[in-house]
Image (cartoon, rainbow, N blue to C red):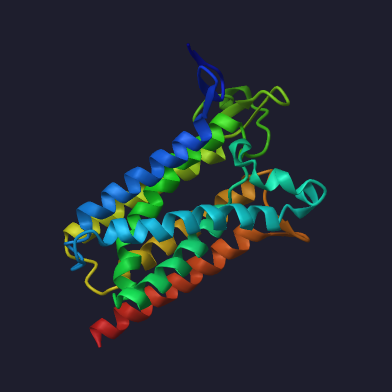
Length: 256
């Protein structure tokens, strides 16, 4: 017997939560996109599959551990909750950082340029984030401040949150839409031959995503905090600044 609920698909005794399904879909689409691009970047066939086998598990573990680390008060009295990921609680930055570490190790073992692997992953990361953010919509999380103007109480500006019966800024949607634009931008720049140096695509990803996250994170009500500092907002700003600096230096070196 198949039954649809607000947050899961029930097939007999099997419960498939939309949150996990959307994350899985984002991963699969990202892998498919990378497979289509690997030869264009001069990488051997099946590099994507081999990289995904180490990068995806690392990203999932890293995303969870990052979230738990900055929400320790919630988990410290019941460590089994750490394993309950179906209710949400994944941090994008933890996933990206863990995937980068796994990619770096992979590059050393396989003797493949790390910059080329990073370029391969860049639009796939953005695509996975764009799709995965809809898992936040299903779980009704990662939303922003309450909206009081009736004219703004409509999607995609805002989303209705059942927990408090109010409309909130749809920050999950803002990030999803922006990540789709990042994918389109990188692929277009690549097709036009504008990304000529290894690492260019990844630097553009870091800059564009970091700039967006630095703004949108400031609108959210559930940010991971380190004292008075929004951890993800600070990290996003640093990534955006650092990657922009690197892109400018590369452009000047090219002209010189």
